[in-house]
Length: 300
Image (cartoon, rainbow, N blue to C red):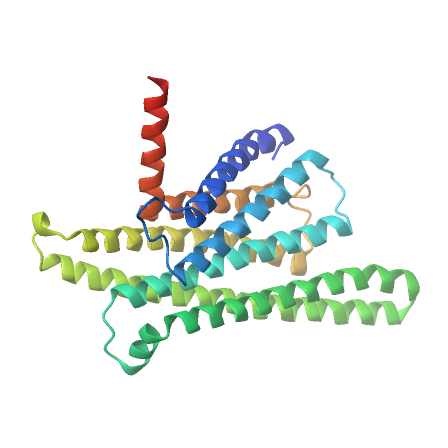
């Protein structure tokens, strides 16, 4: 991808995403008069997602300001790991967002789901803490191995260097496989909870006449559609991250040397997530309409 195309595409995306994120955070902490605002744990889930996307945009702007380089330095490797971990935290947080919607929409019949519905806050916070600990520790191990490789290459010669390099590559591969399994497990949870919610709403809506749909049912359908869109975004971004990790760790390919495609895919995911969550939440839609009316009246 040419530098001009990269800047022309990602520059506007970063700007729009930054505006949406600021509006998102403003709505979370400054609800409308008379509105109760977003309750926990939904507020935490949304906040974590938007903060991750905001930090991603900061890294993108920094990278574009510094300019691109054809050389793949240790700094670029560490930056890639940080970006990868941030987007994975954002992705897996939306998994628990789907689980939260599932617990609130689908009636609990089995013992586990009854417990989940009654203890959704504890479950959500526990899942988030485990998620952060797992992904951050994985990222720190990656960075440690990257920093160790040049030291081994410069301080050790002969067969010892080859042995240490092979050991590091085995560790890289082990981390890659564990992370791959975890992301696919999260994807499976996201798809199962989403499909169960869609199935319940579809059966429920078939028994209700179209002109008699309640506002709560419409709201449930809306957040379910948001979850479906987020699952698609998760699947596409997850497939690219896995392909990129496979290329970097196992194949040592020279494809995308400037990392333009890597940054663009993550930027598109961040943009799509911010827009999708903003549209999917009635609080943000209503606040956007209110602000639009105020701006329109002020111009008259």
